[in-house]
Image (cartoon, rainbow, N blue to C red; front, side):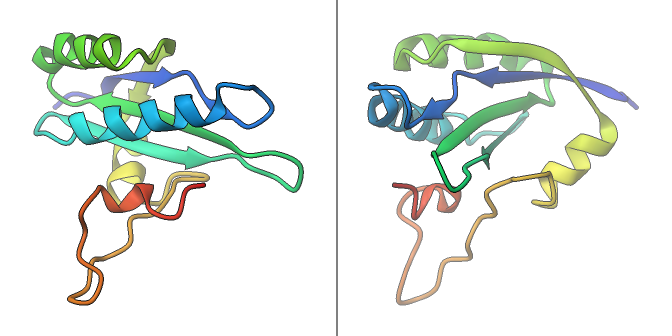
Length: 124
């Protein structure tokens, strides 16, 4: 059993910069593309009273998917910021939506079906 997985973090969307909305749209597009087996994409909200700061990262569970991730990021135009190793406990935290600052997915209802990944709803 593997105990370490590659994690790729992408450029944050920060409303202190003029390209905030463009970067946020790139996050949304890439997040949708990363919804596939072998990948564990997730978003975090580090916003405070003064600014909005949102991040997108993916834990690569299947090493064969890394090339796909990088290709999709390039197509969307979202630069890689940090590449690191995620231990097994972090994978479990993200899978359970318990990672620090993680944007938790909302469950779709009959009145409000999920049309886009639910963890992106409500983002300004």
